[in-house]
Length: 433
Image 1 (spheres, rainbow, N blue to C red):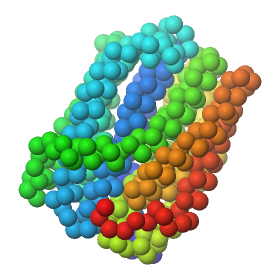
Image 2 (image 1 turned 45 degrees about the horizontal axis):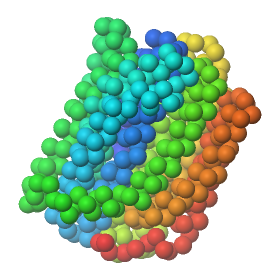
Image 3 (image 1 turned 30 degrees about the vertical axis):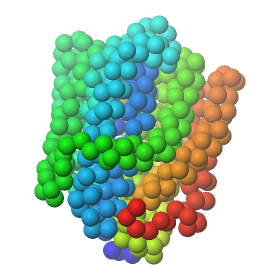
């Protein structure tokens, strides 16, 4: 048991530090913009939801790469592992260019679709038209980070993202408060920071590939394989993003203050999600390696232990958020109405963290096993249960807190589908497939 704990911690701790750097970047932008004004914060809420939806849909670039590279490593095929990693990187670059261009073209209608007022829509456009240039970099970061995790190199992504956060904070403060560029300045800070991280991580992957004589040129077969493997995870992620979009639409319908409060609550939840995802990364990597090595017993033992870690982490995070919610809200905004709206929502978020811990662990285990098709169907079922609950908040004109109670329904439904799956053996496919 201690050996399993050591292996989990060896991956989870550096993964945690690297993962939270992304929400920390969003938290920094939220805090910087939040002290500019309520309308600007609402504009960031609408724009960041659009941007994170575009990028979030491509999370399969990280998850799929981690699972595939880890499975090949577990089977002892280092060259094939790096060849698969590079296929994901080239796929990320191609998708990033296409999606970034699309975001720039449709920035205005996309920003308007989630805005609570015309002024908020204009501010969302200001952010998106600049942030579109960060999309290729964001996707390259996903693919390269996933590959390095599969290789058990957690240090490089950690260092790259720490440096990127520092770059983002310094430049954003200078552009927003120093030069008065507002949301465009925050977006430009994001663009510079993400390209900095993307170049760093891709160069490391290329160097690792050359060390095992893997070709760094685009391999259409590997790119198509990465794309095909990513389709089920794309569907799974799409259901998650639709859920978040529904929540933002409902919050926007409740007014500027609820939408601004939603940005705060979503930022905190994103931070917690990335933190819990550290355990999911351990699940992806260790499951891929043990199944690749045809070790079914070891896979089961690690799954049980990681579930325990998920519960424990969820309890700790929940207690911290519950105790710190007033301080957290004041750190994001000085608007008293937004503060009073956000605090009850954060208390609900705190209450469901133990369930979230288990959800993230099991999600990671099944992704590591390559069980994407099941996850896709489960995501569709969960969305069908969540959507009516969230939309009812808007239909009934209920308080903003109830939108996050509906989020509790979402987490509970995810837990039920994942728990049922892990109890069986269908997901435990052995070998380097």
